[in-house]
Image (cartoon, rainbow, N blue to C red; front, top):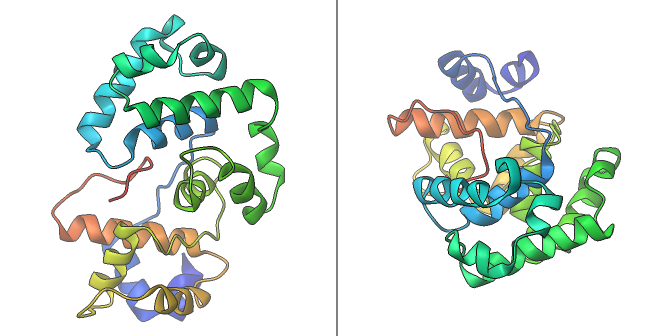
Length: 207
């Protein structure tokens, strides 16, 4: 993190307080996407319970395209998914098993191409796609300006009176290139530490 520390004294202070970046991507993109859809607008605890019930309904407890293809929407609803989320998971599953979405090929695409492919799936927006770039593909230069945890982290780290605007975040992020993902991670960590939450952000949640 020498580059970030050398160009930004606030980032240097944050890195010194937080310590080494321990971001470890999960290469299972499908499972991460399903988790992301389930987790939308509900608590982490509620999402964990639903994911556990989905696992219990699949052969071997696996969340794979093949396993979920065997589940009808009613089974997903019974596991706790809302009707729209059940449709989203079904759409994702059918696109992957039908060959319209090649998750294995995403690693070979540029960031914006990955986003373009993912947002074609119902229920997946740009924010979720950016989280996949960070948490599954391990891309080093992602700046999720619509992520509330990131926005609040910047506000607290830089001691701003108000939340920074999207334009301000983009301008600040230019100085962090080509390591904006790591800058983002540190903003998440400082936000959580300020809240007294020692747990790292290791999955796609909005805070």
